[in-house]
Length: 279
Length: 317
Figure 1 (tube, chains in turn orange, blue):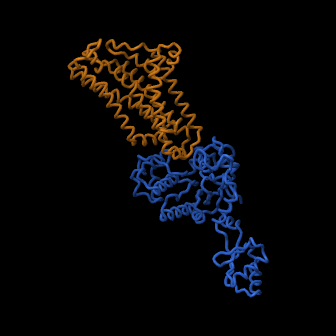
Figure 2: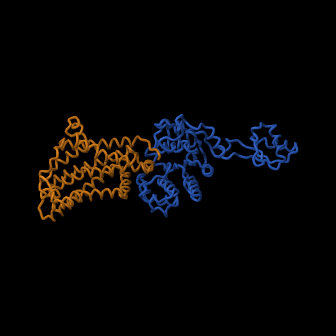
Figure 3: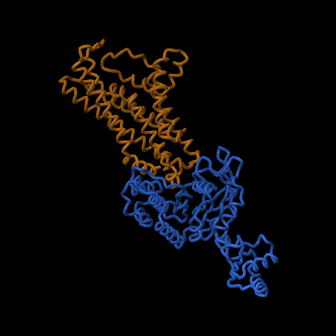
C-alpha cells in the first residue's frame, strides 16, 4: 500500500488539475466568503435591507466566526471541488487506460486502491489545513483593517471544527472516487456527483423537508447530516432564520462516517472484481 | 527431460457478459527461455488471452499459471513484465516520470529506469511529456515499462506496432537479446515476418481457439510441400503430371508447375518427364511459408466462436 501511495503522490503532485481545483477553492472562499462580503457590508448599498445591521453581519468575516463562515462556503463549494478531485483520481485511470498499466505491476488491486485512498485522505487533510489557515489569516487582516476587536474560537472548538471539515471533505472525495470507479468515465462521475449535490439532495432538502415521509429519508442523506454538523458551530450573532437541523450533530458525524466506510467498501468491491477491458 | 513452463493454461475460457465467447478452451504452454509467438488475426482472442494472463480479466472457466503463480497475484506480477494492447501512460507526465510511477507501483528501485530507457533508445525524449510522443515512442515507453522489473517473463502485445522500420529492427534485436539472457518472451502479433524472425515456437489462435502450436519448422511442414517444375513444353509436362496425379494437385503460375506431392517422388517424376521428351530446366521442392500455413489455419476455422459474434466484447481481443 505504501508503494502505491508513493506512486499516487507523484501523480497527484504533478497534476495541474489538482492545483487548479485547490486554487479555485481557496480563491472563491476568500473572495466571496471574506473580501467581497467585508467590502459590501462595510459600504452597504443604499437599498440594503436586513433584519440585522450590516455592521453586525460583517462580523461573519472576523475570527470569532471563522468556523461557521468557512463551513457555509465549504458545504457547497468545497463539496463540489472534492467530488471533482475524487472523481478525477479514479475515472481518469479508466479514461487513459492507465488502470491496466498499474494493475500489471506488483501490488494487488486492493493495495492499489488503498494507496489511492491514503493519498486522497492526506490531500484532503492538507486542503482542510490550508483552507482554515487561509481563512484565519484573511479574517485577521480584515478585523485589523476594520479596527475592531474579535476573539478566536477556543482550541477545542477549533479542533472539533477542523475534524468536522476534514470528515465532510473526505466523504465527498470518496463519493467522487466511488463514482469514478463505478462509471469509469470522468464526465459521468463528475456530472453525476455534482447533479446529486446541487439538484438531487439540495433541491429535495430545500423544497420537501417539511413533507413527513420525505423528511425521514432526508435524515439519512450526507448533505443533510453535514449541515447538521455545521449547525453545531453557530455564528456569534443570531443569524438568518434557517430551519433547525433535521438531526443532531452527533448523529450527523456518525452518518458521515458510515458513508465514508460504505463508499470506500463499495469502491473496493467493484475495483477488485471488475474486468479491466480496453478502450 | 521435461521442460519447465513459464506460462501454462488449461481450458482457459472467457465469455463476456454480452455473451461473446472471446477465448474458448485454450491450452497454451510457453516454455521457459523461449520466445513464443502468439499469432492470430484481429479479433481472434490474442489480447483477451494476454489480459487474462496479466490478471486484468477474470477467466470464465479454466486455469492458468503464469511464472509459477496465479495470474494477477502479486507473486506472478513480480516475476513478469507486461505491455498489453495500447501503451497507456499519464499524458501530463514525462516519459521519465511515468516510469517513476510504474517503478513505485512495482517496488522497483529508481536505478532501473535509466537502463530500461537505454534499452529502448528513449533517453533523449525521456523528459518530454508523454502526450507529445509519437505512436512509436509510446510503444517504446511501454516496452521500457515492461522491462523495468527485470523479470524473467515478458508479455508483449504487438510490440512493433507503430514502429518505423528502424524501430522494428531494433525491437527485434531487443527480443533476441532478451532470449540470449535466458528470458521468456510471449509476444502476440499478426505480423508473420516478425514472428518468423524472432520466435522459437508459435501458437495460432483464431475465433478464440488455439488451432495449431509448434516450432516455425513444424508449422511450415503442416502446410505440406510443393514440387516446382520448370519445363518445355509446359503444356505437355502438365498433361503428363495430371495423368499421373489428380488434376487438383497441379497448378501453374508464372510458367512454373506446382505439384502437391511427397518430396520422395521428385526423381521419378523427373525421369518420366525426360522419358516423354520434356526438357526439365528446374525441379525443386518449395516449402510453404508461414503465411500460407497461417492463412490455411485461420480460414479453416469458423469465422466466429459463438453465435454472438467475433472475439470482441467489452474490449479488444
